[in-house]
Length: 402
Image 1 (cartoon, rainbow, N blue to C red):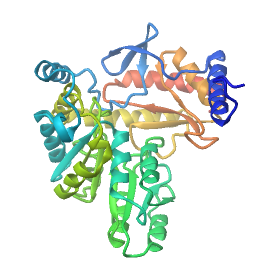
Image 2: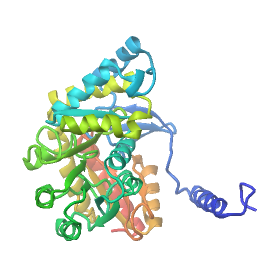
Image 3: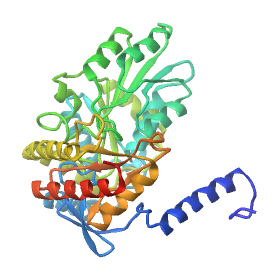
Image 4: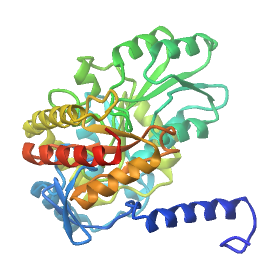
């Protein structure tokens, strides 16, 4: 009998995962779900009593712990308390939520914006809320899981085109009848590979086939563009995207997600998305923190410049010692290891020497493409980055990766 007292497929799946985790723990290769007890300046963390350099952070501009953001969150608790009276549609909307949405809309150069409880919920509920049976949705093959889940939940006919390949997308759109709804969804910066979507060609294809374009900017806001406004600023393409999705939990160090776009679109989403209608509102403290973070992002543009310099140093340094970092151009830097075991081993060597990085293995990535999914932020200093490159390079040679 299985661990749950039942002998069926569910029990076998549970047992397989439990055994896999136990084997990794016994070999000192399990580094997930570690308790971080203290954040020290954004570039360092305290884990199990040890200070380590943080190279797994989504806080690309180093805003976690910013005193103005902390004070804004505290002030919101003093004014509103720790929660709201319910869902946004009923008693859960605060003046703070409206101010945050107005700020997001202005930042993304859109008519309006709406916020959700998480980035995952945003993609899931917006894609499934816009589409239905008989519609067609097209997704880049390596889009984030939340996009794939939203596509499947929509019940639309689901097409996956080759990664960052507008020609393959066009082949698919060409086969769809002209009188049906077509939605194309893509990441702006791909979360596992760190490369940037070919937005100019994608926009051209979507316009020629009258397809809606939705772009997930979870990893591009604060990263791309001279002032960190994202993919449209990066390419100099104003108002090129129909549905501008982003998160409030990465560059913006809080929680939640948003959609920015035309006012009619946003009004529709407020009344059609189950994830908005039936989810509790973002609590006051995270909403205030996100609002203040957007203000700081616009004032402290030096952070974007420093992130760009750190990104160049990190990528060129890793490539210089022999690592394959794929086609990344951003703060997400895949350090390819090959087999899962090598990714686990490199993580162990790095963490034992004070570098907090984590492995991404199959099935999250294809077999043979396991990696460290390393990130660099504006909080890192050049000498720290150089030391980390040396540590990873020495470990990679010992393991036989480079």
